[in-house]
Image 1 (tube, rainbow, N blue to C red):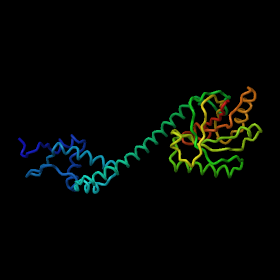
Image 2 (image 1 turned 135 degrees about the vertical axis):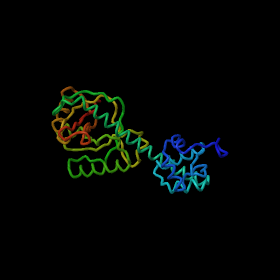
Image 3 (image 1 turned 30 degrees about the vertical axis):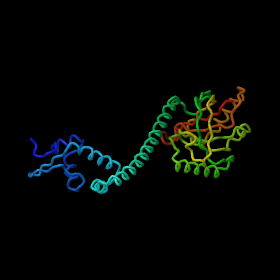
Length: 281
């Protein structure tokens, strides 16, 4: 028969019940954070079962990075208004961390998908043949400032600004940046003029900040050629693509899209894989 009025369990049993150890319980007692419901004359600690909820809450706050000293202040205060403020603050923190974890998960899923796509071309050493591919749904692209120039300093400067903007707005979901080249220039043999850089995003258009320009890459049939190696050495690939369109009497859309499938994240430079495509109208 227990010596006290409320049902209590020994330290070891309480530790197992809460998924912790006796050392942690002793430490929490020593610093005044979480004390047993009863300590007998021999110094043995006993905990009531209803203390499990308090311990669980302390554990959650600790996992969020809240210092034990701060947790102790709130626990000892036992003021509902103060605890409500604490929980509301932690609620916002958890929401932000969940959003960050979701973003990381999206990046991982995107990279895995790109690597799987690239496996089809593992035997490619230079250029693939031009092929017709179906894009099943619209894709949302966040655009850089317009370029429409072949000036390499201007192009590089615009690219840096675009990458910085997407990073600051947390829009990167794992897709490497791409480039859009104007078809009229390509038809005239100009393969150096860039129209825009872009970053493919996986979120509704309404979630993109208003100051950023977007472009919808329409679903449909695309003529595509794949390039192994340096992303910038694409003259032959572009020439091949335009020749294919002309030979087969196909009408292209407004832009040719250059986008990495494998970049420096997952391959050496000589193994980079780039998709160069244009929508067939």
